[in-house]
Length: 142
Image: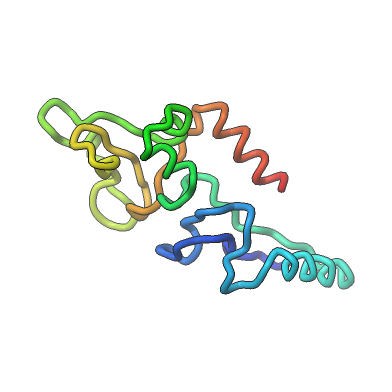
């Protein structure tokens, strides 16, 4: 078996773990046709494949996050957004795995923050939203 790191379209802020499009291959790694050929060749030799799927967050360049930034109510609920505390502090004292607070201002808002447990460009998804679960299921099945 070969275990592949993420190779989907990404701004590469975190070595591909900041996915902007789950349905396309990052051009520096080839094309979907190349991937299909790889799968076919691996099958010839009975080599299995495992993909490192990033399902906790998306890149802030992902269309869902961009739609959320534009105020689309459906996509606002795709991410974990919280108001600042009344004293202006972040919603929690959680720290990012990358350094600093796990919260950043959402868009130009001074009052709303989004959660990013990793890099600031990796917005955490709201898995309590059934639409997110449906979308991620489609991605996994793809």
